[in-house]
Image (cartoon, rainbow, N blue to C red; front, side, top):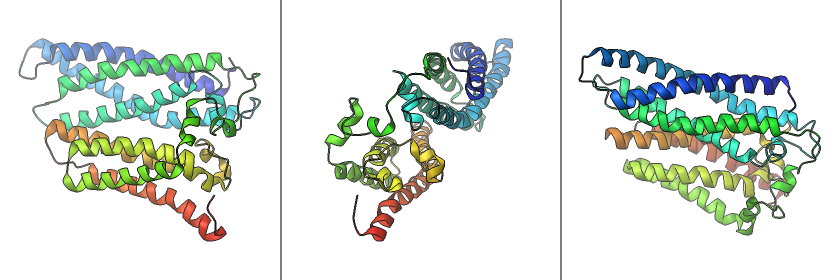
Length: 319
């Protein structure tokens, strides 16, 4: 293991998350089994106080995990300067067999924790606290991927070998790659682009129909095909290189850190779309987050679409 200040900071916070996460997990299990809002017993009084403690722990874990996701990518990007063959964070992440799974767990946990907080604020805004038992049951389930992420991150940095020669992003994100990513390039890129725009149209349709199930499905598919379309079609126009398709290099200074803006818009838009849709199904209320979701998704689509259009206007050809 190579201990840089960034790695030490991440591992220290992992230990803190694990400590408080275990406390929140066991208290959530107790709340899920014994909560009864209609009771006025000493046990219920004790559970009410514990519910505030658990909610505070979860809230602050989420508040810290938001910037730490970006800090993890930044750390891997910085490590690429000392690992032979790596040009950006993707080379470092893929230098360990489960590096990609760790990144997916980090993203998945942000969606889980964010949805939990949406459910929590909806719950406490009602005097009847209708979702208390549900939200603590859900956290007991969400704690599993949280602990898995912490374990994977510790194992990731422990297994990181800075003397190992790794593949650069140009090799990883290409048709010649030996990984499953190469399968993306076996399909015509216009199909991926068509699905990207098609599911955005479905998001608009779901918004006007006020259909929660359709909104959830459309945003989930829009997220998936946005990332695929970014890799196979849009990224070369950002780099202005036909063979450069890495989704991580967008976060570098050479490209004005545009990836941070793009990913924030995409993940925020799809999160509010999916999270708001689930809340609307649970509470049978209006889909109050749909407008925000649609606006963020539209802004992402507009920004990413300007790159090929501007390139064509300037050069008169497509890549």
